[in-house]
Image (cartoon, rainbow, N blue to C red):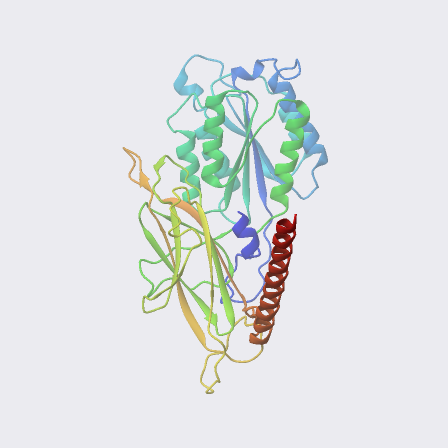
Length: 420
């Protein structure tokens, strides 16, 4: 993340694409609330978990702007019987995704009573369908106090399935119970989609966290642009400055091409987010090569001996500008307005992970690639030869003076000692 922040602004549209600024689509968010029987527990400030969640929902709904695209889905809210097959299909959308109707949303939440099982995986699939696949960023906020009691489908597998679709869907999770198994499952769900996990142990914490996540969706921060890397440099996708997302199987290589003009500097970083159990060896490697295969530079951690590299970056500067012969292609996005020769640099993302037993590595490990091309910086000026000789003369003179003074003091001390 640190590398991502330093190297590049969040611009997901390639510089080489059509320069028309796209109209920002509104973000959409759906709150998914667990209403299973365990939500009756009165262990949050002496109040039941469901009452705390209802209060938090009401306060968040009251504070939302009118144009917020919000929906509400519940799980385990209606079936009171003992047939688990039926109970594990108990998930409904109470409020469709759209401009929020405060009265309708609060009335729907007020009638909820803890009832059934916890089909989290099925609820996540339903929420993804509610949000659709078109438009801007989509966010699911899952609030639960327990782990899924209805798998299959396993909620972690569902989260990976949704992430693999590449439809800008993020799942944030909020845990209402201090249970380690629940925490691990919610962390898995959030990590698979690039979301966050948090525990809420008071009404204020829950309200503040839900409001924060809804506002984050409203900000409509550009999501990484999906891209499919090539198997070799020739024919690999051509990228401009931006943030991209891709997946690669363990031990796979993914290739991309970036044009860099003379006098410019290429900066790139890659961050891997393993969303499943894997055996780790030396992690992820990022390299820049020439079109003919010559390696130009490797990522910062290459050859360091570390075995936990999940994020790395590199920098490479093109040569100084050469005189144009009139046929050179203009540099797109160059810092200067002149024409410069373009060098096509190949970026290679590879990893040395291995899937655990009974895992085939599908659909691959998600990663983000950040690319930026900036004006090259001038090398720092080195001390001149004259200043170097001056320093030697000063040191030599100081040494000579010290030696003479030390010799004179020694002779004086010996003469005085013999006299006495």
